[in-house]
Image 1 (tube, rainbow, N blue to C red):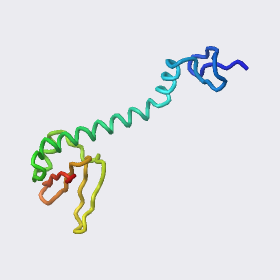
Image 2: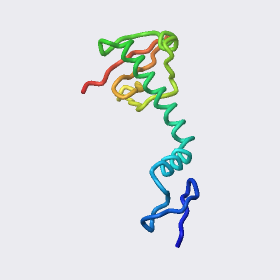
Image 3: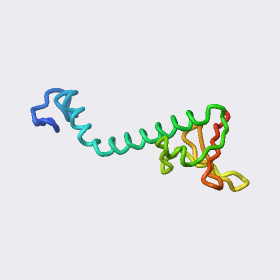
Image 4: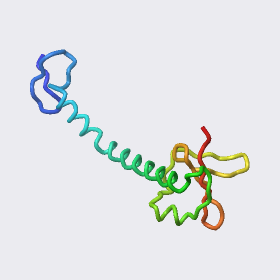
Length: 116
């Protein structure tokens, strides 16, 4: 039985279960199939990385208090975090990996770093 490459349509020579004529066609096909998903994930990961860098820059000592506006002026995006921690006392911390923040009164935030 003659099979055709899913990407370019050329005849496939080799194993019976091959779907592509070569690595180039396989990569091109998979890149096209995953393009939208990869762009979404790349954009979200970029936002998480930027948030992380901002928290590291603003919190070199491991714990500090800062205004929400300072974080926003640096480009911090409050819509993205990697985890949420609710304490027994009812406080909610939003983390980017090991750096996090808790919003307090008067548009301030307490910045923290998780102990390893």
